[in-house]
Length: 465
Image (tube, rainbow, N blue to C red; front, top):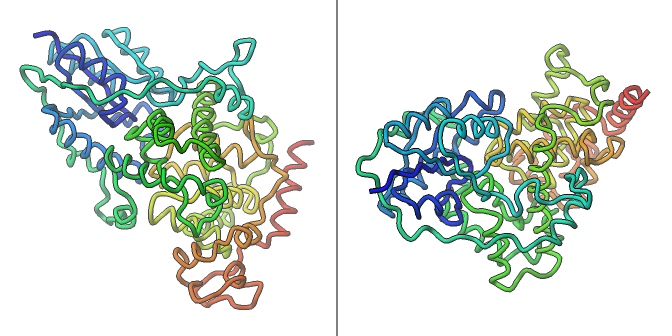
């Protein structure tokens, strides 16, 4: 029998369209391994919501492998050290992996390549980072030309099937028990809302894709309406690699529905995901450091030293700001581990510009509470809203949450996640304080929109001087 082939899994927890798994299966017995490494990512080790999703995703993947006569091997510790140990235990000398571009994984891939035969593949994006370049061969920094260039290079590679056979090694190496990792919350168990909201795993991702294919035609308009369930909600499945963007792209082509503004808008959001990854490759600190220097001079209100800022940050986190659309979003996030995209922008803008709190406080909170928390996308999105990114909205464009709420008909969304206001009709529900209908159990606004806007603009002006 040929030597076993180790497949190092990270955010690619699927059997179909998994290039590393597909190629390894051609060469010999497969040992699929996942290493929980909390040290290399440092501050970006998985947060609570992501750990909940990871547990269920690994559980689902293990069942799928067992159905194909294989197993999932779990190890915890330094990824390079654990993979080297696994190779020594099994007689394997080759590790197959899909490329990952987070700084800690790029470093780990370089270290592992010095110890074992590391074969890397591209499997998690429409087009591999670094492939879409300008005429002079440099990487794009701005999304719009990047998107146009990507569209010109499509279609992506073909999607791969599940390997026809996953042969087993003579002896299976030892594996940790998933439950021993304690990824699930227990004291208290705060994940009830996520269990009710999500189905996790590769099969669930494809079920959601099938649903989405029937509704994507309405996406261009309906995506901005938080009271209407017309978003794909595929983001956590994409983040954990239970489905690939290549599979989504080809599924729409095969169904003959890759036309119209709905699909075109969604396709550009898949491209934004590629763009964010390219940004992280060019600027490895993009999730923690402002790209524009003037933001280092901005006088942020610091919750670590300012009692009022700490109080305001807590109110934002708990959905107690007095702005119903913001509070609904923050409560949806806490309850389900996810937030509607339009509301994400409103809530993020509110923290940065209304409360004048550093965008990195929001990035950290989202990292802990989002099931789709992604280093590249999270950082790129926060810097876009803040105006601090390489390609971003202007800081002086300050969203008016109350206007946004009414414009995008968020009344039903507010009723669902802010039950104190469920008895109110539109337009009162969007701003109950203004209409003199503020319930006793719901807070007044922590700052008025005009005062917040003036404070933010003055702070930005000083930073620019």
